[in-house]
Image (tube, rainbow, N blue to C red; front, side, top):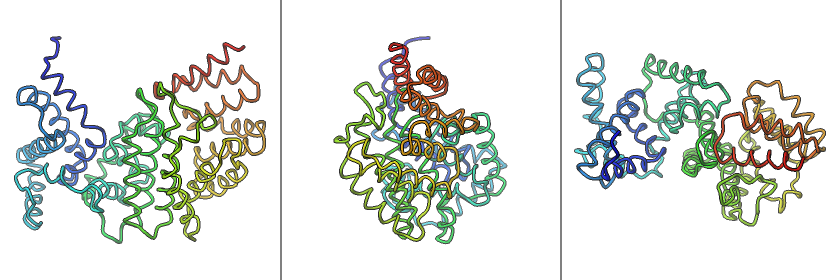
Length: 431
């Protein structure tokens, strides 16, 4: 293979700089216009390939994302014109355009996407989050589809977020796309009457998007700031869209209180720092203050639910000046309340850890061991890390080492791998 020319290197770097969030916005804009997720993703890929061929010759455009949007849009229109099966869709797109107000820059649809105020309630991606939460889709399909195409996560990352095998997730996404085509679901923002019905699914997606950014399921870095920032942005938009929703406030509070720890969550080499060892003076006071205010407001509402309770848990952590001063008994009570809304494996894991901290490590390992038969947790790295840490504190070093090895054998990011390897080496070295 011939080495890349300087122009090819610059083109590849420019394409790489169009990050996950920007690519997801392009897919969202294309899907909303053409009503076809497969077409949207395929045309974005074609646009990327065209950019890698043309930019070394023509130079890098001022707005690579807008260029890609324009190229993908034109490629999609070409396909629709050639495809007799899709001819009626193209005609409908033309009719819709005639009824719609004239665009500000009619010659360049990418310009409209690139210049649009992303903080507006009419945000393309937020609208598409709601569209993919259509009630005619199965709940698990709504979440998988939205995370894959609109949050921009790879299929393996979606599988990790939902604690299912990758093959199962691939089948789920394929099924969801087929269902959308069969039902003729339109990729537009729902009417006011549909918003409240679809809000829980949209919130779940935003939560999972943040969780993936908080601790990446693959790759080099432990944290993805672009994902966490996007999730917080969308959570703020949900609060604007639903100002009376305690759960919207609870979700935003949870994300802000968690994000407040960001400056203390990784060392100079990017490896994760456990909560117990974090320098709390580095936590962001502004995010803590905003999060506590929202958490208190959400908890006071008679319609408080799972996110309000999770925000309350995060608030207890934020209010403790040191790890040792954490009110684990209160957190354990909150987890019991949370289990009435969400009895899933992650909540059960959090509850086991909280009870262990509140009632003693022996109680903690007993509760963790009771969860060892859950197939979802067996594949979930944080479960084995929780066991390893608890066993190490109990002085059961051989068992702790085994738990660390199990955690290392599961998928995860490179920075976390390094942390686990160091923890394991510390046990072996002291033994």
